[in-house]
Length: 369
Image (cartoon, rainbow, N blue to C red; front, side):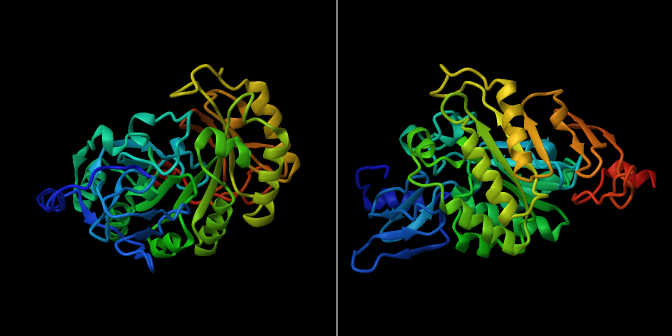
């Protein structure tokens, strides 16, 4: 927990008047511990004393009620290709407005976005305030097809994400998020009907010791519970796995993860092996060798996954989508750009007729038709 001295009554009143401070969702009083609350947004389920913060650093117990301190306090509003998330099989070539706040419930020592994710309250909150209506309006003005909650862990700005997602759906926009998967099943249930697709990011193949040592997460097992809840709700799911050389590149971990995906989410679930680049507190590690990624991609395919990708290596053949039956390259990409689309109108391989599991088609193709 992040500690702090108890503020005065006047300081509390001033804090509660700020636009970015709102009462949180999904919390409850702790029975038998006066003034304590339990946050039920992520699997840490922090028990928070009065005047203290949860692990994420942006949720605070004020006089026995839990508050979010980052409602609408955005650190980024960027228009991105959906392939950047990465979502390869959901609404290809569409554009999404990506938004984030500060804070995270993980402490990844290799985080690429550490300036926002690892910013805790002792360093000060920062960002530009938006109302949900303003985010949706901006998305429409920029010609976005949807909104993605990303860059830092969206679970920790859940209230703003939900309010924005509700409005986005009303305006015909879709919603996606990029998450570490530690959201509780209760949160998934509460968000049902408003979230369309999700990228769940594993690191180190989901190895428990890796999570403990390099991410300060006690156990990655709850992620699998959350994935099952997401599947039950019908959300589109793609899985990524960051491969950190030397310490997070074990073949047996990737094999175990791939096998679980096949058995529980289905063999057509897109699986992305992401190249590590030195960052934050792990700058003394080298980038992941491409040969390592290729070896692990072979492992994932051996376990039955039909769509295996290599990310952060632009120009690699495993940026493309290949027909699982005949091997024909039905979609070609370079980085985040689709360079060739060879599927039929009903998304079948033109060579053998195999139905490729993908939602949507490039908009320019629909306009041409």
